[in-house]
Length: 189
Image (cartoon, rainbow, N blue to C red; front, side, top):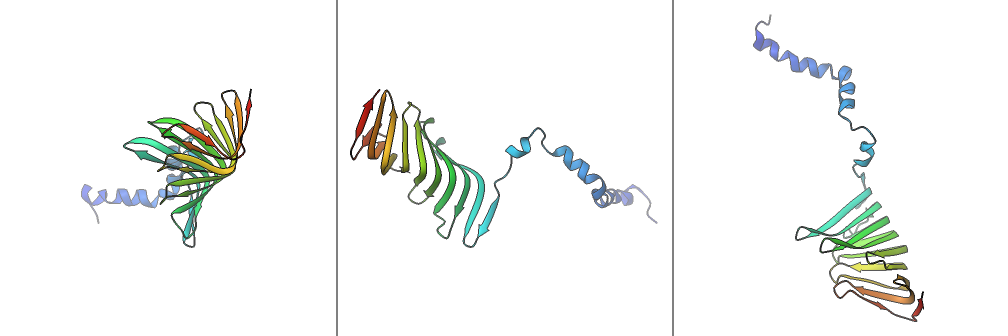
């Protein structure tokens, strides 16, 4: 027969553990966030497919010297056998300079090459600059090392009372200069 407090003390944790199915559900529901916060805190789901992976609802960013340099948000991200090339769907990329947002690049499809640090966007690509300029093209690339946005596809640049059409464009963030190539047509509003 067990007597004394010392012998009875070990029964309390065992009783709590064995009765968990009875009171555990009510206890965990108290700890869940309420007011729709649970949907905002959802962790991206990752699945592996062969040598690659797939994730839903992804947001990743790069810091340089403790300051945000760029960030990419994608509805769906996946990689095949080449882990350095990430494919994305429904993409929004934000490019910063000195912690200030300079561009928001959106597109239906994207690819990020982590070795070359190049983001390539396709299908209805739009670049909204903080200075009001809007760039539209079927595809374009952002080279993080060279700090350039380039395209060889037909491009339309709108802003500051003008509309520019051309075949190809290069924007140098260091020099803050646009170079539209091909047959250029300028409409002044």
